Amino acid sequence: MIDTKHIGLRLPTVSFEVEKGRLRFFAKATGETRPEYLDESAARAAGYRSLPAPPTFLMGADLDAGTMTTLLETLNVPIGRILHGEQSFTYHAPVCAGDVLSVESKISDIYGKKSGALEFIVKDSLIKDATGETVLEARSVIVVRNPQENAA
Amino acid sequence: MNAPTRDQVKVGEALPPLELPPITRATLALFAGASGDHNPIHIDIDFAKASGMPDVFAHGMLPMAYLGRFLTQWAPQTRLRRFSVRFAAITPVGARLSCTGKIVEITEDGHETLARLEIGVVDKQGEVKLAGDALVALA
Image 1 (cartoon, rainbow over the protein chains, first blue to last red):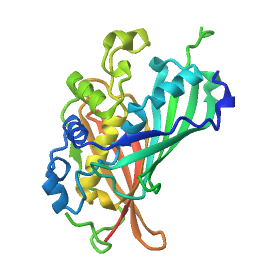
Image 2: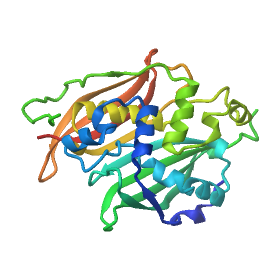
Image 3: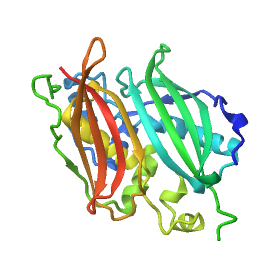
Image 4: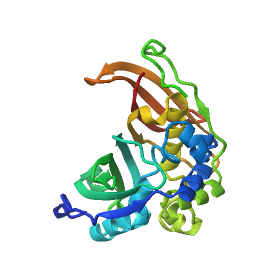
């Protein structure tokens, strides 16, 4: 079982720069072909400062910095046992290429279900712009599949 | 693209669906790099098998990214206020996914009129992979 003493644990604040090349790579990987997500002049014509970060793109901010690796190591959870359970985003301001963001994450909850066969880790993140304003709130629920040692 | 207006939408109305090409191993490799999620369970069949899975499978965030495309083809991204999903089933290699959604409520939050959408991703057999909801500010 994951030690619930980690509830409330704050993970190291990380910095993330939104890069045009990464946004175009994300567009390619997700089949996005609309010009405002690929071409800077089209993005400006659509009212953005530069290429916009798509709605789910900023998951990468924590991942790039190794926050998930740190979390799993701290909780002693093997990466091969995790699944994504839930994900939510609350948007406060557009994020575009060139923005330099900070990500503050914490473990908000840890709980078990099905007699410990599944455990759940809730991680909440605040993504802030260079002025300290929150642009995005993100909540991830990670499911841990525990081996059934006593299964018949 | 203009945001849908209060007069243009009604509760019960379905959004135009988004049909996706089959998930390939190449899709998963590209998404691993682009998303920053390098968990080998999605790109290395040996690791997946050693972890008790029959094969690699899609990152949950891949169909969620498709849902993001689906929402932003209906309304500009600047109108999106909230986007939330539950991952209901694993998406295997070869899956053909569709994004669907409908307006379930028109609501006010003080200074904006919002459409609440029920959204989902299903495969060709109709199995629900993701289910969730979104709030979109109407013009």
